Length: 68
Image (cartoon, rainbow, N blue to C red; front, side, top):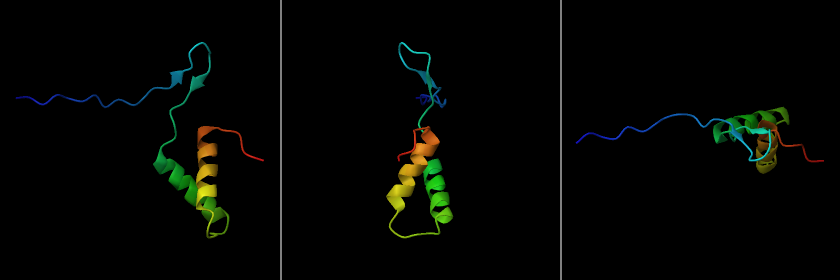
């Protein structure tokens, strides 16, 4: 019996229904982790700020506005 082949295509950017805004696919967790590490290093390697750095990396990579 032959195995079924899977399609290995990347998700294309999607358009919101009824708008002309293109929504990019979510940033991958590997890239977020890399950016969070960079933020940690830039901040002097402080302990206890891992979630703050993660969320900052997500905002940067996904284009969300920065919190004030």
